[in-house]
Image 1 (cartoon, rainbow, N blue to C red):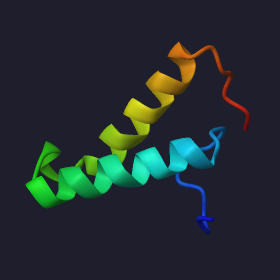
Image 2: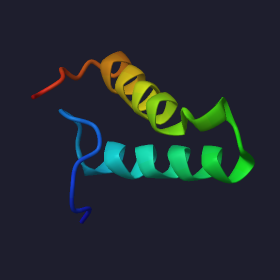
Image 3: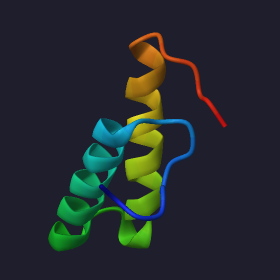
Image 4: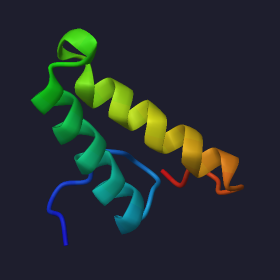
Amino acid sequence: MLGKKHVKGVGEKEERMYEHIREKAEEEGRYGGRAKEVAARTVLKQHKEKGHEKNE
């Protein structure tokens, strides 16, 4: 399990998705240093589209 949660209100699966998106973006040099923000927004968007609510 991951230590600190990076995205509030999502489960472990979404946390792993966040890490994967962020790492891949950083490796490829995408988003000009905004990889964390883009990864978090992507995960939250997919989380919401699946009908889940953000639990803070």
